[in-house]
Image (tube, rainbow over all chains, first blue to last red):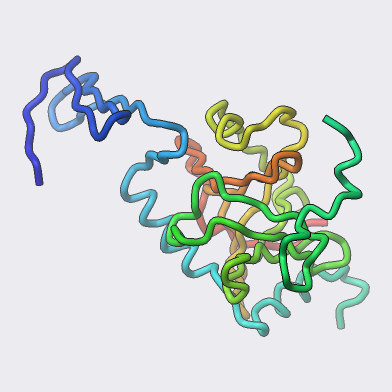
Length: 80
Length: 145
């Protein structure tokens, strides 16, 4: 891992068009600002990983599971 | 721009059976599925309550998605300007919100933190993270209507 020291107000540039600026450092909390092209998504890592996991769990449900959801969606008059 | 697009077979280059289904391009791939950039929405329920968001490249890959209104009436995600830009959105009223469903035989949940937003005009979509909302990734789904 590349390690750099930056002060508040200073930035690093990743590639040509991603700029990360340290806005404020207070104790162990660092506020950073990120400028990136719109096709580069920026997420908190833990949020992104949770979303990856949730998407994988949601992907390609079994026919039984799909049928169970469809049953839930049926108007109650049609349920047994 | 003409308003006759509805009668034009947008997906006519596809070789499978879903010829009249517009292909939706992901502005950004869904997290966990970087290689899947094109999907079609296949209706699974007569009332329009359930769809399969199905990969064009790999029809084995599909996500169950649903409009949130019937299930989560208070759910009103705010879409930021960057999303409009990513989707080439001209008219925000043409955006469609779909929540990704995790289907279980015993319990079904919906991802309210990261809905899929589809622009019905540009046919572009993105799964957005509603940062700062504390929305659940796994909200239990019930019929509320």
